[in-house]
Image (tube, rainbow, N blue to C red):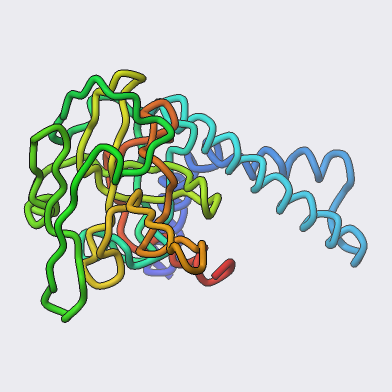
Amino acid sequence: MGNKRKSQEKVTVKKKWYSFLDYIDPFNYLDMLLYNTIGEPKSTLKKVLFWIIYIAFAFLLAYILYTLLGILFGSTMPLATVVSGSMEPTFQRGDVVILGGAKNIKAQTITTTENIAQKDLSWFSEMTYKINEYGLEEVDTITINHQTINLNDIVKTNNSVIVYVSNIQGIPIIHRVVAIIDAGDGTFLITKGDNSKTNRYIDQDCEVSPITGYLTRGCLNLYPVKKEMVIGKKIGLIPYIGYAKLFLFG
């Protein structure tokens, strides 16, 4: 009998220890509102109605949280899920990148007096190529205004990783900044994925075939990315939690 009483006391203490969660759980307040206005969900109709309201409320909370994170981190897209292998081994598919404002972007800065907003890379830069470890052609160096950047060193540096929207595919791209160009018509960024097997060329290396008229190489964005068009800069990483999104949306 004594043991039973002690067991009951332990359960009571445990309940009191967890009871503070009721005050921070928004669904607890939703439950109270629904029970006071609709009543207990005894019928099938009421149960369905409860679930519809729960799901709508969950989406609303997620939207509010996402907005607050955007304000806190200074980015219109505070979280971005990695959906491809273009940044391996730095990021894996399913990783979630935390984004801050596009300030203090780190990369080698090159100054030129040329206007480059609507110019292909070939107009103001020279690139050399090599055969990489996979037996595939890959960009080796890029030279702008007599300054050469070795692309082999980029992954090993702390160059910033940014998100911008591809003007070809219309989707967010998470890639590393190769160079910052202070040009006559603004500040622009050159970017590339870290994966030497799938992203062997600079994103803006958009060579057009004179025969077919189609873009060749790994072109993701016509012309350099204007700094004002950057959505955010990586400030953190949460591994693998984005797999749920990949599973649901591919």
